[in-house]
Image 1 (tube, rainbow, N blue to C red):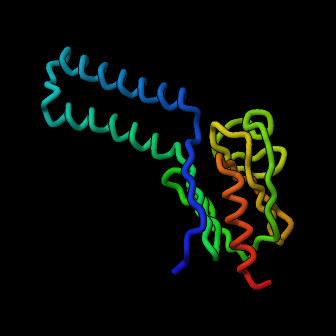
Image 2 (image 1 turned 180 degrees about the vertical axis):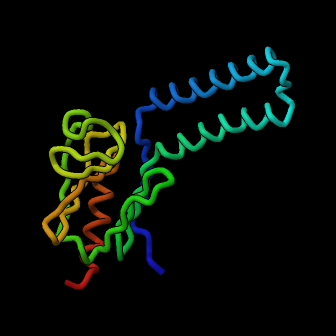
Image 3 (image 1 turned 90 degrees about the vertical axis):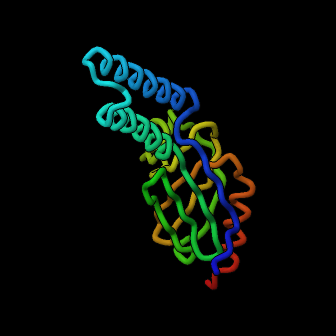
Length: 164
């Protein structure tokens, strides 16, 4: 079995943006309920329940997309952004790692999967620290982290275990 050396989940957007999205979804739900009452559609009816459930599921999906999950094992590092499979990089493809400070807005133009000054970045809100993964083919990408020391230590341990 592939032992997990490190795991981290981070929110992609700042908390104020997540709260604004939740408030918007709640407001839309309230407006829909009001419109149902105006049109004579009971919120208890199948049509009313389906529409409200649609808004709630949209909100839940949006929140699921707001997460970046990082996992380091002895054989690979994997990134997952929301429900989308991000990237699976075998340790054998990695040359080295380096700690880095950055500005999400200045260097990458925001949060999420971004292309910026340093190439591709998996950028979460609330941190200006990351680990740059340097690949053997000369490419690199940055993963933001709130626990850079632990993340880099796990990467070093995994890279040491790979036979070069």
